[in-house]
Length: 233
Image (tube, rainbow, N blue to C red; front, side, top):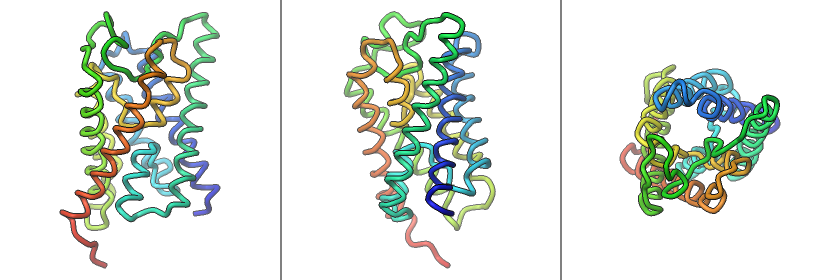
């Protein structure tokens, strides 16, 4: 595929991921709850994996691209291209959500932004986890996510089920961590929501949801390669 095709696929896929997941949280979170939001993220990943996966691999997440790069399955040139496309797609989706809210006179509020501690003080169902707790949680969950992704897309794995296993793992990750950090494991998703959030903690705390997922992804690549060995042709 050409670079422009990959860029467009990642942009569209990330746009749909943020709109599907964060959009559900913002517009329907009060009705569907944490379970509904978790399913929305998982189902969106499944849809985009089969929708644009044949074009770009449907990373839709800078941490995923960094993990794939660290595993030796992606060039540095494509890495930069993917990350830019993902961030742009996520910001466009968040901007679209903000526009829709303005059309019915609503308030953006937290806007599904990630955070910890005081960011969710008084919010129903949320725990005030510490910064260290949030960092470790996001790092570990991203590590798990990348292990699933690298294993599911390994040529030695059963064909045709990668999108489903990855989507289900993302659903599980959200079920674990929505009440703690609103679940990131995706720097693009975190950046886009923080930009438009009215929560005073969203931007100052953003670094955690950029750095922790990247470290978790890189560690997963190292560990996966060490336990899986070389692919056989």
